[in-house]
Length: 205
Image (cartoon, rainbow, N blue to C red; front, side, top):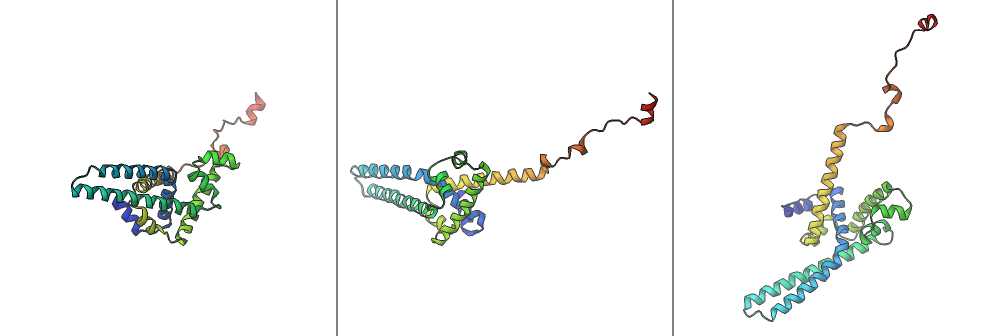
């Protein structure tokens, strides 16, 4: 199912899809080192198992497994390098959020800027990073080709797509309700009118 979704992303090239792919890359960053170390341990374990592999077919399966693990390590290293080169020093807010693991509220507090502004700058930063990566030769199709088979990336892309779909559903629901902003309510217009007493009645009372 998700393989078909990645294939769809490879064919389509709108800007929103590009940003989702780039955001998935950023979401991978905090886990790359741990995954790299885990694959290193798995390679060592496979090499150790090789001493007990007697038959040629067993040895071949071990070699293939080691090669897959090693290919994933190379891919993760390239992914990390690509993210770090793409963000650079100018993309400080992206680095703080995705590479240093700070929450948006912490960034807002440390930078003394509104939380809404942080979210806006993060969105702008992702759009800018998409353009930078394209200039480096990594457009959406190239990213999916290089990293689409990496389980870490595919799981992050799935999560990012689901979150985006949910956000779109919320926006559509808000539009359908057609709720007027609180600030635009005319309180004087909506106030219940009191019955007016005739001035003659007041005078005769």
